[in-house]
Image 1 (tube, rainbow, N blue to C red):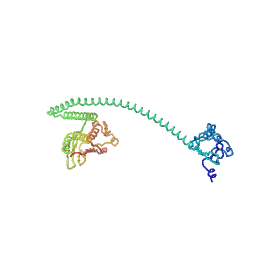
Image 2: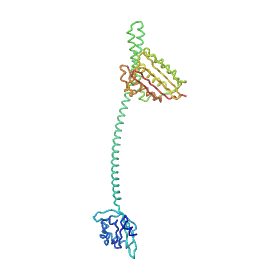
Image 3: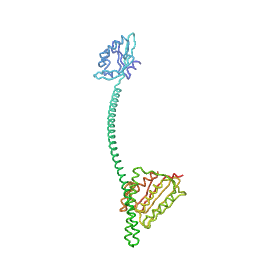
Length: 392
């Protein structure tokens, strides 16, 4: 049974005497070393070893016999084996000392490590390749960071220049707007005086041209107001002041004011929904928003039309709606509607700066509100402002 176990063992088993001469070798060991028992039995076990172990083996045995200090016997270690074709392979060698029939025998157990070493080698190669990749990626990241830092510096310089230009533009707009107001006021006053002095003359042309002067002054004043509002917004000078007020009374006053500048037979219809009317918002900003929307409704609607102006107060929100039956906004222009200086392509010769809705949006945002709209060409437009109602 013992012989059958040895002959069929997966690992190689070799026995040698105290002089290093091979006495037995099992089939697994023969397969590993590519030899037959007849070729190695009776020979020194060093024939199965490559240099330098080949030359030192007998010295190892003699030293153990003298000192009994084991370097491999009873310990085991990784060594290299020499095949018949001259190639070498790694294996794990465990050696046991056996006393048998009054003499000393050494048994070597050989476990082939070729696959393990190949796998280990592949793992090392992969680790080395991975290190190279990491190093490459790290260098690439460093280069990207350097480029990013350089780009950041360039952008910072550009932003600084743009900031300077913006400040210069804002100062110019502010100065120009204020400087224009004085001559415009003089023109307006002169037009009023001319109208008064000309009352004794029944000439329709005088009235027509005075009306044109007044209308042009009003348009230019509106443009200057838009520029000043934009300049203050850009400079961060607009801070909302929330105070409680009656939104119905507030809206009725705006309706009366806007009705005076409406076109012939244009009627602004105001209606309020809700059982209470007190809100807490910035009156000035809200008035600017509503006047802007109603002015647009007047401007882009024809004579003999109705403009709906509604307020609705719920427990949670104030909803302001301005609806007209005017020219509407083309679908392709709607996505740009709230951009500064943008005007829809169907506005024609109707005067405007393209700033109004941009200002309304920003004012609404300052009061924690938002704006939305619905529009169809030649069917009119409806704008809705919604603000949280925090009044208690």
